[in-house]
Amino acid sequence: MYRPPLKEVRFALHALAGDERLSGLAAFPDYSADFADEVLEQAARFAEQVLAPINALGDRSGASLEAGGVVMPAAFKDAYRQFVDAGWTRLGGPVEHGGLGAPLALCSAVEEFWGSANLAFKLCPLLTRGAIDAIQRCGSPEQRQRYLPRMVSGEWTGTMNLTEPQAGSDLGAIRTRAVRDGEAYRIFGQKIFITYGDHDLTSNIVHLVLARIEGAPPGTHGVSMFIVPKMRLDPDGALGQRNDVLCVSLDHQLGIRASPTCVLNYGDEGGATGYLVGEPNRGLEYMFVMMNAARLAVGLEGYSLAERAYQQALEWARQRVQGRVAGWPFSADGKPATIVEHADVKRMLLTIKAYTDAARAIALYGALQLDLAAHAQRPAERDAARARGELLIPIIKGWSTERGLLSPSLGIQIHGGMGFIEETGAAQYLRDARITTIYEGTTGIQAADLLGRKLGRDGGATMFGLLDDVRGELESLGPTDADARRSCQAAVAAVDTLRRTTTALLALAARGAQFALAVSEPYLELCGVVFGAWAMAKSHVLAVREFAADPAFYGGKRQLARFYIAQVLPTAAALAAIVDGAGAARVVAAASAVL
Ligand SMILES: Cc1cc2nc3c(=O)[nH]c(=O)nc-3n(C[C@H](O)[C@H](O)[C@H](O)COP(=O)(O)OP(=O)(O)OC[C@H]3O[C@@H](n4cnc5c(N)ncnc54)[C@H](O)[C@@H]3O)c2cc1C
Image 1 (tube, rainbow, N blue to C red):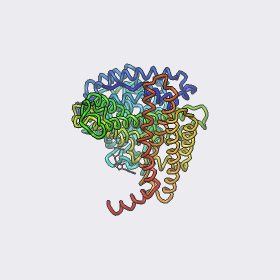
Image 2 (image 1 turned 45 degrees about the vertical axis):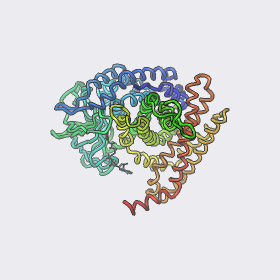
Image 3 (image 1 turned 90 degrees about the vertical axis):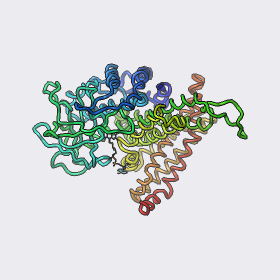
Image 4 (image 1 turned 90 degrees about the horizontal axis):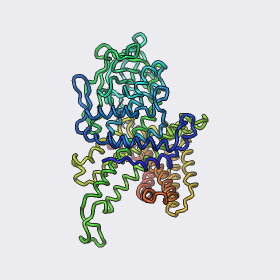
């Protein structure tokens, strides 16, 4: 049973991320906390009643490849129809093509519910949104008119075709060819790992394909982007002939089994018709434009699964009777206890919840920055928000998904042996979570992006600016409660540690990129832990202030913040030591002797 954590999400969106900044923007004339709450309530109902009940079924039956293409479980077809009818595909879509134009921060809050309820289902609208963004930003007016209304309405879905057998993290190695053919191109090649690359949920699929135009320069500067519809369109926009793109194989995967991951062959019958998006050789640049939103969306998946794992583990822990609450010296006296009464089980449950709360707060704050980057009034405000959002994206993607992996593992541990048995249902969350640290760039690639692109491009100025603001906010919160004051002081000290470590990392990079890259992942972890402490300390102060309004909820927030500061934040010192100390040199030296 999944219960969407409405109160938690509202608190993160309104009190921690500060979504009131959206209300004043011309792009969101109707935005208010009440409006957002109404949307969240409806989404929560849909997630709980329609998507969650078919999650285990999707895991068991998966999609299948048959003669006519990929066939989805019937329950998924029904759920997709309801998703479309309820208008959920339109929520963040461009208004001029039938969308509702809701801010990314609100869409992200809603997406948590989809991800917790049914990650395999959620990937279909997620990929479609990425394709919509790309066509909207980089396509011609005619392409927008032709494809977007039917993608925004959910009548068609979209995919992202980047990966090839020899081109995974390194997209400069792409070999798929594009040969000019009048106004269009003929596309030849093979793409692997394409999420929802084929299915029978809709009558058409709009593939966005990265390929190399004949004669293009090698490497990343010779890659272009193409629209390749599964069904060609007649001049009037009606569905025409089948295009020359075929799903030749469906992957058997560890998790998200109802999400069809396809091998797609292009051009086996003379060439798939494709249409160039934007200018030649700028395909990767266009992909990177959307990469932020896509990586944010995967970051949300991390804590979505942590939330789901937490709910299931808590329910189990409240029912399972085992042992007695220990006294000192240990004795076998006392009443039989449910396992939730054991201190170590409490610790595990609190750990998952603390990770979830912290990751949610950072992600929604990051999403808000991307909204401000697109829509803030003054150009300087937009630029600053863009730089800050882009800095946070690899941290959100990397830290949240790594927590999303640890959390279902703890969830299984709480179940004991029954967690290892598939029928219990706890194992699916761990299997589903396993992909989130890999696709849209592995954690190693996020760490390299954080170091090389985000710190490297301005010498750390955006990071230092953010740390100044975080420190300033923590100092200005003015907690009246001694405990909350201690949380703020601990978070401020951690911010100072991150500042020192950032300076040290940049100095290390100047000595040699390999040194800095050897500790870039612990650095990313450190950023997550410290920004998480910011959110938790702020949450602590607000919870003290609002306590009387809802003692159960805010009492929980206070205690969870104390737990985070006591049990999660201390890892920051160890991570900083790895980055600051001889860790990097040891990796480089040991690797040459051992590997
Ligand atoms: C279920 C699933 C769905 C997917 N969906 C899509 C999709 O819809 N569209 C699409 O185009 N792709 C998709 N992918 C592909 C996915 O994005 C890639 O698998 C991912 O980017 C990693 O590439 P790779 O598998 O080739 O691993 P590799 O690039 O071979 O990486 C292997 C290891 O080497 C490390 N590594 C590689 N290069 C570096 C480097 N420069 N620095 C440090 N470490 C490095 C990586 O971190 C990783 O640990 C999907 C994959 C899966 C499994």
